[in-house]
Length: 386
Image 1 (spheres, rainbow, N blue to C red):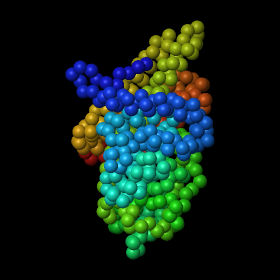
Image 2 (tube, rainbow, N blue to C red; image 1 turned 90 degrees about the vertical axis):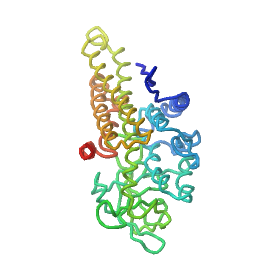
Image 3 (tube, one colour; image 1 turned 60 degrees about the vertical axis):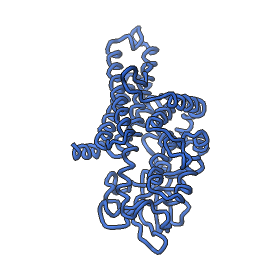
């Protein structure tokens, strides 16, 4: 079922020939390098570290980042293209692992010094180092303003104590962009530090086992009197909460893309299946109930994608879309919930088998309405901005 990604005539085109070239290049890479191996990587619980180097060498990790950071700059729709094509791997875990760069380095690029960008950004964009983001704590969840990991100034260092959990790429990360408390309680006492994983007092748990996203390594990180140079502070002390909020808008856009693409892939797999699977003497698409369910699925996917594109266009134009991107995230995730559920239902018993793509999509989907801020948190944000 082909869907035209460009508007025609008087309508705005979101994608240009340049976008199409990047899309083609990434799709070929995923088809050749990832899809033949993804089942093995899923079962293993990680993909080879060499994939960071390969995607870095091809310029994929640098998409959307400034050339002065060694990025391959482009507008926000270049980032959308990258997200859509990475999802063609059919593995949310692979996308999350490769994509941990996109939640870890934007605060460094926005607030970092030239020296910090040289040390903490360029090697990651090149694929030579792995970056992760450390915000969530075992007792905090989405309550970012009340995090308890402390960083106490001691001369030219901060002494960091506490822990972070659910850290994507946490097992293998070389550096962690970390939210710490340097001041008073609540949002006004939070700062951001880049903590290198070889720092004494930095400890990593064993790999956390998850419902989905199997191909990404996930860890809990512990800090025990971890001495971090003051030179690793991003921007101003006690301003970190605002840096985190800036980061969330782009993270939520990426989750929107993951959500509607999860639904899109489930729809595509289902359309192929119902044309082949026979029951009661005819293929499943010979039944009106099947055709109508597919129409509902396709409609939901189309609306989720187009709503995301529209919000992305406004963000690209410099508009503040905190309320709208929160709406888009909730909507896209609800669509992915419904479409992956319906896909498994139409596949029947086969949809419950591990070798079936829709089974993986169904599992991977569940985290999307939790990560980057839960559905409930999104509703609170929306309600305050209405």
